[in-house]
Amino acid sequence: MAYEEVKALTFDVFGTVVDWRTSVAREAARIGRAAGIDADWEALADRWRAGYQPSMARVRSGDLPWTNFDDLHRISLVESLADLGISGFNDAALDDLNRAWRKLDAWPDSVAGLTRLKARFVVATLSNGNVSQLVDIAKNANLPWDVILSAELMRHYKPDPESTWGPPNSWVSPPIKS
Image (cartoon, rainbow, N blue to C red):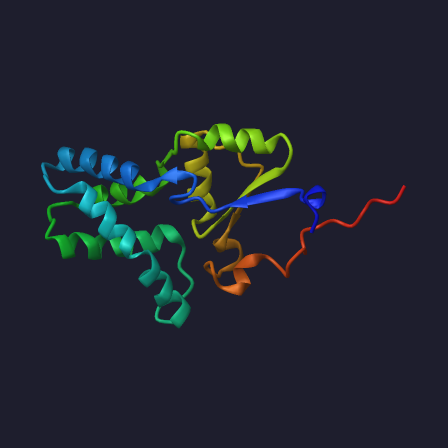
């Protein structure tokens, strides 16, 4: 495909456009303080994120039915806290902590870069995050998406071929005839 034919650009979100580690650790520290719990919140963020691929593998293998990212994160959160020996959160605090993945900050150059690209292209997510989660992240971080594409829509996680929304070039529109 020639450059002139490119109409849209898709972006991974977690780690590429937003800083999940700092954002999640910050929210965990805030919620931990409120609950009177002290822990290594960066270690929790790292351990929690380490559950990302294994949790999707459970869906792919059929061990879990299709499960959106909010629910996979909740499962991984409970496992991560247990692995790190962190206890004392009630269910409401766990739910609040799980929402940390909806409050992610953009990398310092993300908004300006996406805004600049948006002047020429449609800019879209192509993420394993669920739609409502990606909307919340966009609002929190002022991300200028034109379209939010989520694995939730295809019920397959990247890099499954089914998560690509069709064969290569399927999004290229034919020329409009006058």
